[in-house]
Image 1 (cartoon, rainbow, N blue to C red):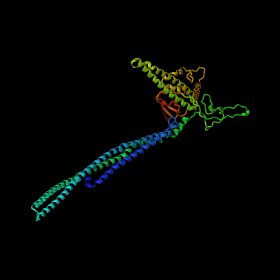
Image 2: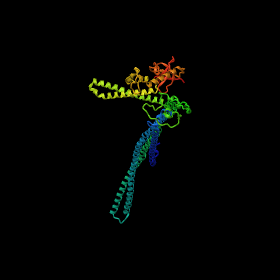
Image 3: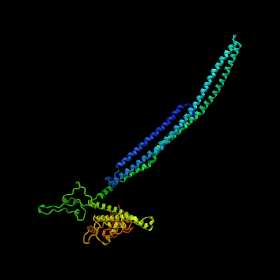
Image 4: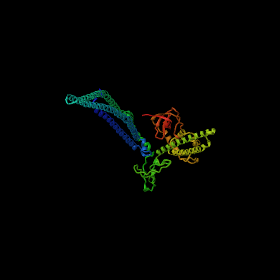
Length: 545
């Protein structure tokens, strides 16, 4: 079944149907465009939402990201940002693969439909023109035959009239013959025009029109197929990004499962643990006996320890220490003395690590400049060695400055009670960066500002080390604690008994007595009972549960 055979007389229906099909394509393109706008607006709102709730650099919320619940929220924001990107991708693909393609195809269909309809109109106009010629020849034949019939009747009447002359009769007969001859020519012309029209009409209805209508049918079917492909693309476009969207949603789920309330509590303790002892009992002050008022004797007032909460009270240290009272903001100092002991040690250690990295960069740069200078000296055509002198001098000054800062902060860290830091720094920094510490080989005391102390002058840091060694010896005399796990040495470490550390060899297995409390050291024990501290990063630890 086809339109040319079964709908040969339904030109108006075919015209309306094909126009309606093109309008449907336009309607679908408009629908998809509005869908892409919705996706783009949705993605934009999601991005604005994630940007709104993302913490700014340096703000309080960014500092709290060390907690798992805060970090998980940031992970969710990142996943939502990626999810917004996938919605934008859906909108872009729909616009490219559906809207633009169908719009271009629609223009081609309109031009094709216009061409086919124009051909149909031309064929019909040609048939109408032939019909007009047929009708004209028919009317002429009718008129001339009527005139010929009148002329024949007049000639016969004249011939029977007794009063008519012979000339009149001959003239009437000649006129009748002429009219009859003209009528015969008109008849032949009419017959020829009729035959021509019938042929063209047959050509029009059995060939031209069916061919044009079949072309319109083929065009419409191609339109339907293309539109169906657009329908499928509408779902496939979103289905193709579903795996990535699924990963985004899995990331959100993973962020929820990664929250560990216990670890968050431990992180809060490690971040804000002050290291102070709880206040001791207040002494009884007997005013009736005239005895001087005695201050509260607690570990917070011990000489050589950082200022505690009671010492911060000044003259009112005999008064109770209220936890929930509003405290004034302390003055920030370079040695972080305004911080509690535990936090001070961490900040000093962090500062030392940063300075060590900067010093290492300067050392590497100095070595590179020296090599370049040597190359220039051997090959003058490559460059002038003197041009590197300003950079070499500047690098040397930077190294000297950083070495001074490193010595200063290490002294403060020693004062704060850092265990075995000097040994770790010696192992982790290059020899050039630590050349300023050669004084330790001569057992010369060193002051916090980097200058040599007199032999008779007591060094507070040495006193603290002595206190630390005494405490460690007391711990050795106590009953050995049960190990909580084992560790395997990944690197060699030269321990020092005076600093509370022990020597270990790569591959050696030791028992873990005390876990790392955030200072980078773990307490271990050998099979012979010897105990000491080792760097946590030097071993692989397995804790028994």
